[in-house]
Image (cartoon, rainbow, N blue to C red):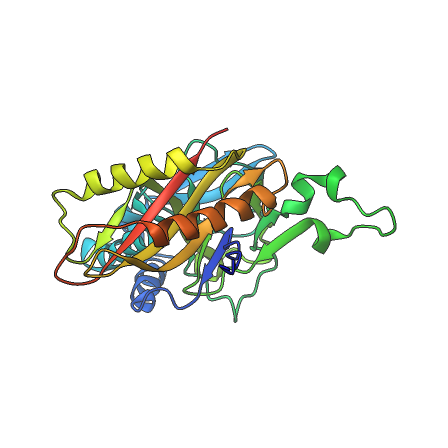
Length: 309
């Protein structure tokens, strides 16, 4: 009798520390721009003071305008590569560079149309910070279904309602932008080099990503065939969101290792409810039964699956 092991649900929030090897180069360039406050160089006049009353207060500029191409392109390429391998998203929106000094913050909001994943990459010297605040704040999943998860026998405090993510230096944070989120008000510093500094935006263009010798010319036809077979057998589920799956295809075309990388799936049973568990188990079994054409060696495929209710 076949033994079933239900695959574990995968992260809705990713924190990747020590993300970029040349993070110090980006940071040094920023600091050099503000080293002498008496200098009025034209390259300092790039900041937009974005203020929406009771919602946003921040200094921002397009990251690709602020940093010279020779030191920015490496970071951008690393970001895109990570998104392709881990999310199945082939590009990023034009990233912003945002600076938070005293009084800057973002109140709770959601970014529905921009992309399936939001990212925040920190260039903030967090350990030696002189300010308070600055954390990325997200409403916890349990609060988004409050009445279903309410415990009548205990109260709630801030840590039960909100999740605080510290923007540590060289940390990439990735999350579902549909979840209400913001930035805790920064207080205590006016010097730009002492503020909260982040590059942020959205991962976009979800589509399959191939690494290995499988034919790229016929790759989309292979994926279309896989999705057609998958759809004909998919159990009845009520889900919204995106699920990223990565799997290894051997030289013989058999699928071996299957990794569920991340998901933003929401169902009637909650973010990690039974519909999600049923889907993961179905996909794990289906993929291991599927066959790709033979090739000269093993390949890896990252497959983003989008569900709309």
